[in-house]
Image (spheres, rainbow, N blue to C red):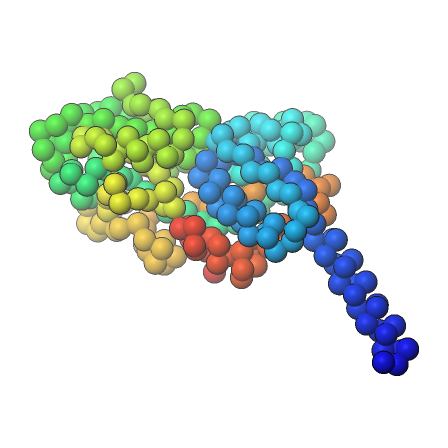
Length: 277
């Protein structure tokens, strides 16, 4: 082998090694219970692709993640809602510039037990149930049975989004049962005929039934599916986002770029959320 060829090969190996080192990431991601399974899978695939990287993913809710972001104990906050004005002001007061990146979309899904004969509800009926005005399934075409409504707790971005976009900012009823995690809602609704709850689309399982929803007072009912979320016919679609400090962009960019890539968006689809394209 010629000396020049050896030199070229050596340079190529060094460049490859350097690129590999640049891809090594050590970050903490915290927040939304909805985004949790997606971030966990993205981190798993990324760390296999780039050994030496360490991405720690912790749930707890959007509010918990954003609070950790505000006090500097996480590199990325996962959120299923936008930052509140009060949170933005805290960042501003602290002189912290930040960025928001949408990594996927979610079709927020209203679920009941498969034993429940109700298959569809209007937004107004859902509002009535979760504000406590509708308390029996017979009021919405079901059996004469008490409604047991499950919600996420107030630190959840899903709780906030549902209140704003489905309940028209009305308060939840006093009898609503708040659950600490989405998985707990799936389990509780699946085991109780009279139950109803709301979950991220990726949490759908066979032990719960998704309801069709109408946002035009019952003229049309739309099922939560990937296709309906993408063509915008399903009315309860929301962005899932990451927040990070502008000064940390170099630290987190490789991982975020991976999620936004074709490979990362394939993971979005595999987990059960809606891709950006």
